[in-house]
Image 1 (cartoon, rainbow, N blue to C red):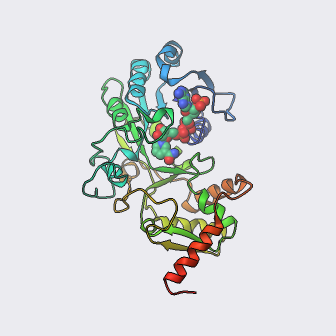
Image 2: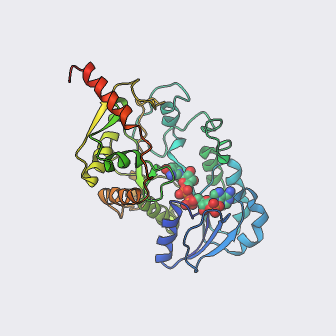
Image 3: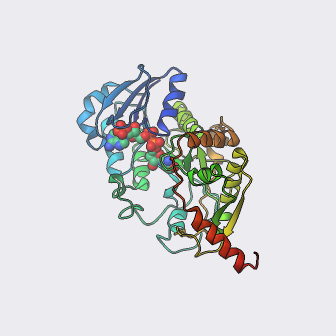
Length: 338
Ligand SMILES: NC(=O)c1ccc[n+]([C@@H]2O[C@H](COP(=O)([O-])OP(=O)(O)OC[C@H]3O[C@@H](n4cnc5c(N)ncnc54)[C@H](OP(=O)(O)O)[C@@H]3O)[C@@H](O)[C@H]2O)c1
């Protein structure tokens, strides 16, 4: 298959590329060339900024892609430009979206008051009614116009150029720019006797996905024509609570310490969200209708993540262990333990 990827060189993309190359597909990447990665010489590259995608129309259309994968559609304009440039010049488009489209997200982040949305969230469930969730909250360029709901609508609206939308969970793994497991791995490596966890987070569940498994779901969607016009959730079959996740990391690292639940108001970085609302995705559709299965086991995904984090830890821990010790002391006194 001839495949054109917008983006593809940072975190999830390199695994998508590897899997596609292993199957012998013909790849072209469009990106700015700022994020470098060791790419095979067999990949054709077109350099440019997606904000000016239409200025590259000629060269992009000449690729005659069977599938265009847009790894980074953030705004309505991003999606409109992709549809305009490739309609008539490619057969299908696959767009990467996010679990943040569901109403649950605005409840969780206290963007809007309302009843908790029932989980697990199916693809047909209610979406947010408030738009632009990161506007004014994140300083990065993409944040102001970021709205995956509008991206999805645009991609699904063109009957002549069918689109597939993939709703991703929180993704973790080696090279994770958000380093979601770092705070636990650093403390375990430092043989801390305990890790403090806000008690409201202990049982809280969110869907996550190991990066290589998420990439294989993306690849499967690109290769299966009958995924066209579908919206698909991606994520673990059975999400764990935060406490369970930390314990899993501990098991892999052979950590002998203890996770201690701390009441609201004690920790420096207070959690800003409403943990009554969980963000768990129902992944039945991609599994049953399209036979998706994870290739990498949960334990192995954690093991690979731990291995990468350990090789990339800072020289000094950024955490204030003295302060944590003082807090434990206070908590013990308050609980009558000495
Ligand atoms: N990580 C998560 O937990 C998570 C959760 C939900 C959804 N997602 C979605 O996953 C996607 C991102 O995943 P990823 O970072 O792993 O993707 P990736 O495709 O591996 O990397 C991002 C790519 O975008 C390119 N890029 C960035 N800005 C560009 C621009 N203005 N013009 C052209 N190319 C540009 C970068 O290359 P250059 O810098 O060289 O241009 C890089 O190749 C997003 O759609 C995000 O919403 C992620």
